[in-house]
Length: 232
Image 1 (cartoon, rainbow, N blue to C red):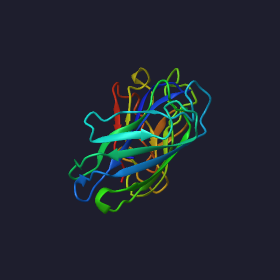
Image 2: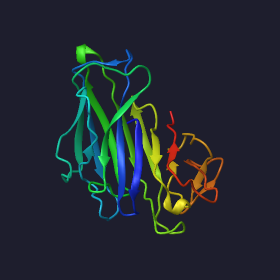
Image 3: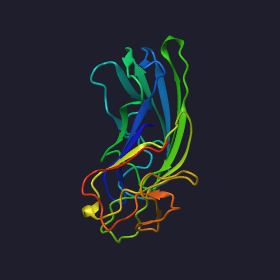
């Protein structure tokens, strides 16, 4: 996973996108490569968004790659796979190629508080070698009716392993009335959060040099999208 996105929603349902990343030691992903992500979703509060619904995808416009789901979008299941197939060589250079996404939209959204875990398997064209990674996290509960409403919870990273060498960057959409704290990310003990560290108290994230979350509440929130950087 190379990036996460939080869109609109309420404390009962959440629009969420999961971007799938690929790196290559040669700078090229060869034709014939097939990479499969297994996604498990469990838990979460009641609401209009389904906890266990298969999302839609963004699609390739150039026939170089395609993203295939094991079940149709909207299917009720707690586990599904997404397979990325490369039909032609794709030059990506250095860094991580981060284009395909699993899109939990207004229709197929995810319940806040749900736990999402992913693992990757694959085969690389021309007998290349493959290393997969694993990531797990708890979906944030955002957009209550006012900044002082209880029930809001941050995005919580739980574990990562293997080729998942970073906790992915997160893009948070416009926050509640520009003054909510709907953009907080919590990291496991021992991981240093980026920027101004804080401790979550149930409504706000209060500045703390030992806190496992960020960013700290400063009396208001950005009116536009907030970018939480990756932590490696």
